Image (tube, rainbow, N blue to C red; front, top):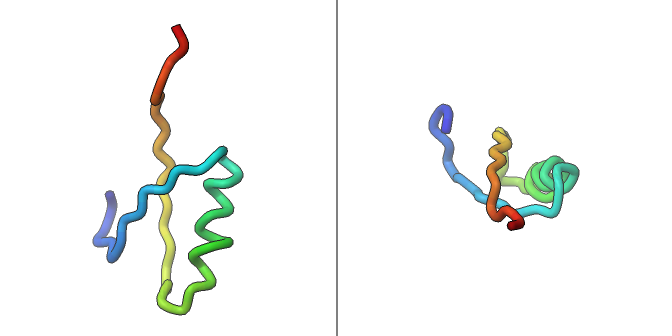
Length: 49
């Protein structure tokens, strides 16, 4: 993580579009939220085989 965040959220979403929509649609309208930063991290959870 970069800087000194006040809160760290780990969010599971269906796809990349949902990942982009979550902060703008859910968090940015909250009165206590002054700034948002996001960092996309991708990893393989399970492989077929």
